Amino acid sequence: MEILQEFNKTVNVLGAFVLGDQGLMASTLPQSIDHASIVSAGNGILRTMQGIESTTAKKIDEMTIKGANGTIVARNLEKGCLCVVCTGNVNLALINLTLGAVSKSVNDALAAEGARPVKTRTAGVSHLGGMGSDAMAKLRATLGGKWTARHSSSVHG
Image (cartoon, rainbow, N blue to C red; front, side, top):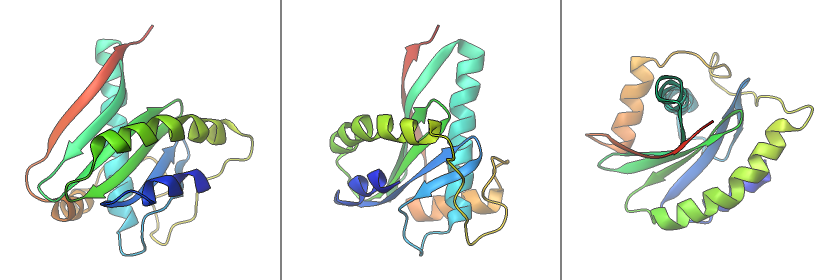
């Protein structure tokens, strides 16, 4: 999905990735990022969004996880989520503007017949599985220290 390249033009953005029902669908993250850690984090974010929706009947549109050294901004999609991985002091307003424009294109691409997961260099990350504590520890080390979550929600139904 070339549309994800839009995020890479933003200062302090490492890249973006899309998790669909079938696993990792696209990624613009550099090779230096451990994809297993990122996919595990994305799975956790997606499952958190789904859990909140199932228990409160409110759909989570977006979730931001902020660490001392970075941030992940996730947008809930019809069949998965779009995550942007950032370092430093990223301009969240700009990320949110780009998310709005890119999300529709990503939803359309996921709905298109023939959308398939990407092959990854790490076995076992192409499916929605549980979050490994090892993978989460690596991600926390990248983003830094304490994590806080902020979300916006809308009533669904």
